[in-house]
Amino acid sequence: MSVRVHFLGCGDAFGSGGRLHTCFHLRGGEDSMLIDCGATSLQALKRQGIDPGSVASVALSHLHGDHFGGVPWLIMDGRFAKRTEPLVVSGPAGTEQRVRSVWEALYPGAPEADLPFELRFLQYDERAPTTLPGATVTPFGVIHSSGAPSYGLRVEYAGRVISYSGDTEWTDALIDLAKGADLFICECNFYDTQVPGHLDFRALETKLPQLDCRRLILTHMSEQMLERVSGLELETASDGLAVDLG
Image 1 (tube, rainbow, N blue to C red):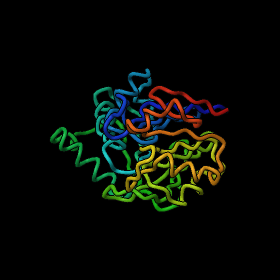
Image 2: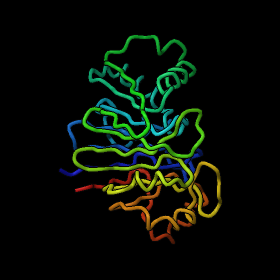
Image 3: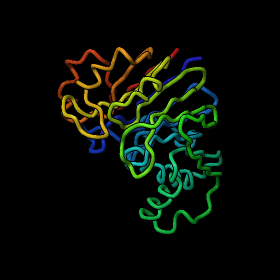
Image 4: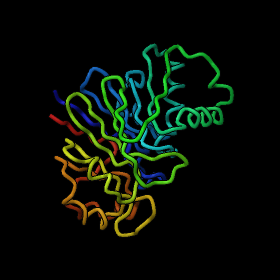
């Protein structure tokens, strides 16, 4: 069975290069899902002609706005579109509280209103599989400060494995995360500047032989990285990129 990974948004927190916030759409199984849902994700879905109501689940890597800030809008869209299918949101400890706090700040009173569909939140445990509609997500702890645990995610979906680093500086957990993956999506925020909590290309380059994955695509790039994309030998993401895993 073929799985399509659609990079709806692949930008950094500051929209470098005019790119949208992180949001990857998976389809090919019985249920479609999102990996991360940054603040611009609803626009990204609609820009690509994907019905937000068809998304059965969202797997969040960590609780920064460019990775989870679109969840309240996804829920609100479901309310006004009269969505009926359930929506499951998985994430680190504190995900439901953080989503509801942001939702309340954006639209006071909105979290208390009735929804026409079931909304459930699931909490990760380190390296323990979490079952979502049509997928299993296993979180691997990474190094990134977000006020809650931050994870890389290994997603088993429709017979394929899509691994995603989340935001992190180098950690050997990435070796386990990427092992045997059909696709490893890896953040690479900087080219040669070392910043806590993020990877740079020069550091990643030295670790590539340890990453046993079938395909690797870089994402979450700053202006510093985008200026050098044309000279890289590795694949890089762009908004709207679709990858088929046959």
